[in-house]
Length: 152
Image 1 (cartoon, rainbow, N blue to C red):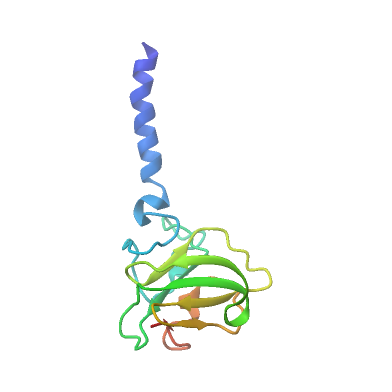
Image 2 (spheres, rainbow, N blue to C red):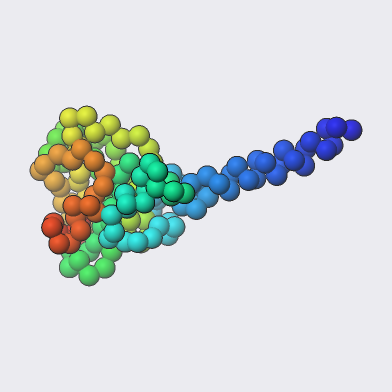
């Protein structure tokens, strides 16, 4: 008899735990091609998506990719993080860009020794020759202090 009373509560608790996870709002712990759950294109994602940022999930790497003219976001891209400059060395991480041009991941990223981003689009690749030690891409690529991240 007690089991009949416990089962409905267990189902409710399981549902509530699932709906409170970051995945329920964003669809996944990382951006994916075609998804459109992200927002605030071009803004520094880490203003909210950081430890202590409230209910927002914590991203380890996040940013926005634009078209070559920097007039619209570009959903047809992939961000790769290498151990060497200009797309050399070992490919350590790959992050897909979503339908709104944003990329993000909550996966653990090891920045030890620095990583070198490379963005590949439909017809070209743009790579950084300097290492990054943080994944707050739009904090530098804000369109004023540095150009936006762009690709064809």
